[in-house]
Length: 340
Image 1 (cartoon, one colour):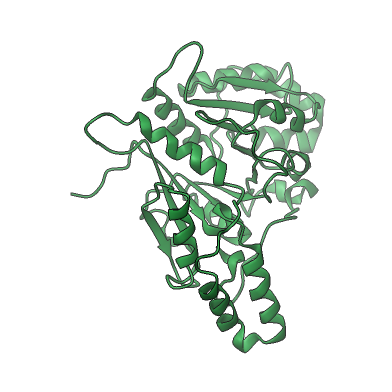
Image 2 (cartoon, rainbow, N blue to C red; image 1 turned 180 degrees about the vertical axis):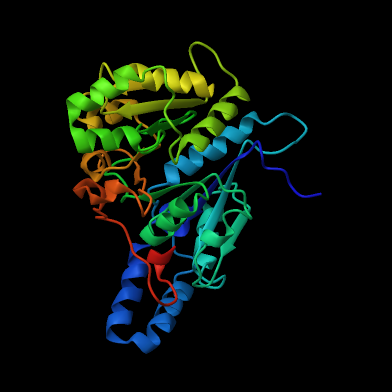
């Protein structure tokens, strides 16, 4: 009988999101420029020679640890896990041994993998029932968003210090418009300005917003919370929405979440206040936003990921929607680390 993961939160993660593989990627890219015929062999040789070498944590490592810790709350006697993490990599199985070794060295409870030897891993997301895909590869994330496979983000470089992140509790922060909710309200703001946006949201406060690319993930996180112990003082999962909205655009957010039957622990309506300082105080294991305007400062403080717009979105005309600093692009040939 096939494993039923319908009630399990499944996170697919690239090797470059889990570990810092920039050195290996630099070797591949340098060889590709100077000796393209032997670039793959140079990369392969480096990975074989360093199979037992430790890797530094990637941006998503704190999140993965916090997610896997939730399985301590599984019902006695087995049953499906609360959370499943799948490592998905363009490396070949042979060059991926270094990744396998580092997973074991850290005693991460990751048992499922997909190593595709240069092919995109996106085609296998459905097979693994992935709800969230985290990568450093821009093209892969874009394919996921355009195909409506699941939520996806392009991770920024690791923050300067992740030792301050809490243990014993998973914390996730989301932007609102074009992430949890669709982009229709943000388009009003872009096209007509702040006053029209505020008037539109106040007028429609009782009209639920359409779902955005992360709505399904948020709803599944909410169902996950229902299966976990909860008290006034503590919950193993804490969710925040950190949005540039302010009154009178705030009620539509809260009423939409109520309509969806979704509970979030904290909401911050900032109205122009820097998101980075709020995130520094909240200390999430990951923050998702659609604009580099907010991510540039946030990513230095907390693990962060950019949510791509769909390729046909009018928001791609905005300067905030096109910056991909710190992210990696696909290669035409077999991957170095940058191709996951």
